[in-house]
Structures are given as C-alpha cells and as structure tokens.
Image (tube, rainbow, N blue to C red):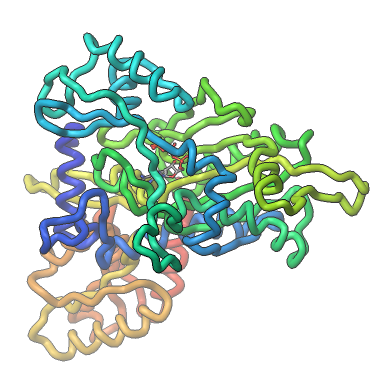
Length: 466
Ligand code: ATP
C-alpha cells in the first residue's frame, strides 16, 4: 500500500478521475475549502446518510427525525454561545503569509491549548512555545499576534440595509441548535416521551481558517446529529449506551476495521459538559476526529429557556416530576465519514504482474451495485439481451450498463468505483439464459440463471460485512 501522503494524493486523484469529488468552481480557479460531489460521490454520500438514518431513526422506537432550516433566529446563536465564543485562534506567518490555527500548531508541538483560553492567554502560551513551533509551509518562526476569529458565517438574508453586517442572519454553524429549539414541538406533536432522541442530517457552515485535508475540513459541510433527551439522573447511563451504539455503527454496521478507530477523551471540558469523547479515524494523515459524543447536561435547554423566555422543562406524565432534560449527543460529519470510507476502501493489488486499483467499499455503500456488460459490442443480440437485463435490474439496484472497450477494461473501471458485481451476457446466455457474475474482491466468476439473478443479488448484496 502507498505511504501516507502518497495515499491521500491517490485518493484525491481517484476521486477526481472517477467522478467522486471535484474541487468547487474549478473552471474559475477553485474555491477554497469547498467541494462538489460527482455522480459516484453523490451515490456514496447518499448511501452513508441513508445507512446513518436507518441505524439512528428507523431501527429505534425512541428516536425521531427532523429537518430544520439553515437560517434561524439570530438570538439562537447568542443563546448557544456561538456569537461570543465560537472562535478559533489565528496567526499569520510574516514570511510566507500563510495563516494557521494556533491550537493546531501547538497541538503538533505536543502542547495542549484550551478552547476556552482568552486571546491574551493563548498569545502568551504561543509566543512562549516558539522554540518548538515553526510555520508548516516555509519553516520560519516569525508570526503575527494571535487573533481569535469567529467561525459563524454571516449573510444579509431579510436585511435590506447597506450596513446589514451589524445585524446579520447567520448560516447555522451546527445542526443541533435546530433540534433544541424544536424539542417542544416534537414532544407536543409526536408520541415520544423523555427519554427520546431527535436526529437530523443537514448542512452547516464555518469560516474555517485553514483549508486543508480535502473533505476533512471544509467551510460548507454536512452533519449527522442525534440529540438524546434524558432525566438528569439517567444522563450518564444514556451516554454509555450512545458511545457503545455509535462505535458499533462504524465497526459492526459499516464494517470499518477496529484498528483504524480509537477513542479520544477530552480532558479540558467546557463548564457544562459532564464528559466528552471523540471517535477518531486513522485517516491517511493520522488519527483525527470523525465524530464527537458529548454529555451536555441541561445547558442547551436552559440557555434557550433563558433567551426565549419559554419554559422548556419537561413534566413527566407518569411521575408528575418536572425537570429540565439533560442531553447526550452524537455529532458526525458526512464528508469525514465519506473520507474514512474512501481511505478504508482504497486497495492496490498485483494481479498477474499488473496493478489493480479496487475500492473495496462495504457493499451497502457501493455507489453502483451491479454493472451489466454484453461480451461484444458489435453483436446486436448480446447487446439487446444485456440491455434488457440492465433495464430489469435497475428497478431494484443502482446499475450501470457498459459496452465500451474489452471486458477486462470494463472490470478495471468498475473496480475503481467499487462495484461489487459485474454481470456479463455472452453467447451461452443466448442458449441457456445464464450469465457470469464476477465478484469484485475475489474476482471469481459464478454462472447464475437469469431468473434467479435478482434473488441472488439481494442475498449477496445484503450479506453481513464481517
Ligand atoms: P474540529 O476540532 O476538527 O474542528 P469540532 O470539534 O469543531 O471539529 P464539532 O463541532 O464537534 O467538531 O462537529 C461535529 C462533527 O462535525 C465533527 O466530528 C466532524 O465530523 C464534523 N465537522 C466539524 N467541522 C467540520 C468541517 N469544517 N468540515 C467537515 N466536517 C466537520
């Protein structure tokens, strides 16, 4: 397998070459930290979101879904602390003018910077540590003073004045605020009772200072979040359950290998948090956060009660006890999950002296499930039979028809997009209505009767990962 940076380059290049992920606005020279998902990328991304939704909502009778809007009342971001405190420390190299996040520079030097540190404190720590830190781009040690930079993205939505930036509408910096402010609506309109959860998938926006590492850190991204509301005494019980349930999502459910996943415990917690862990994934650039799982106490609902003037406490209909629910949350990024899946799937193999690149996606996430080929392009009988089969199968599975080049080339193309099964219609098919089905991973071929094909594919595509 290729080495770290080389691996990242190979993944980025495959994503572009095969239509998974493109840099945004490329024909205009690109647009930093924004990416577009191409034809196979959108299938992969949709599959990730669908599986998350199934696992978090469909399989549970205590969790319901929500799709709240990107724009919300300004006060929500004041109540949440984002307007005053959602800021990253920034410095600029005086030599090459590249900006860096100071907490990351410190972290790379093995020094921990607390999120809550004031601008003054972080300046002190940073300039006292300069013997261990240099600019990651040019290697010099000449930096501007550290400034805290707010990450919320502003817009003029609904504001028709010239100085709108004094009274901006914010694009949401995280999806969970839409859940907190709808928690009462959900309680009053559905049959849930505490404990219960609300799940949501949606876009979030952050003015990230550094744009690096492909879709790992982007300024527009999607989050998959679930907020679980519990009795205060049951918060940590729910937290332990959620940690275990989320770990199993990646290992048992998606099939990522355990050696590429690890827990990271947050040592310096914000004042309201009881406990916070990240699940980290071993990306080509090392172990980094894939999702956060946090026990948040009653902070969110108390803040929104205070700022909105609406009492968000809960009256338990069974015990008549009134309390402010505590929240445990799971917050994962779609882009980071896609990147973890791409990194895990990327495989180079030597096949009879030739290199084969194959994306060994878990079958349930593969962008195309089945490819159908006529053996030869210039035999109308074969082409028609293969095309009829393709039209029938695409009712059930994402399918692709390909009659370009020789079959070997078509296999290689399907391997690079990770298609689990390739079906070839050949001369025997015209005689006995059977086809060859080639397995992506073993490259073995089976002969299957057309009338049994749909059932065969269903069984093989659904088989458990392990
Ligand atoms: P980081 O420390 O890497 O900036 P974070 O701790 O700020 O991440 P959270 O606010 O906990 O992240 O967001 C929850 C999840 O949303 C993260 O685990 C990640 O998967 C995703 N996420 C956050 N910021 C980004 C981003 N800029 N680009 C892509 N995904 C992101």
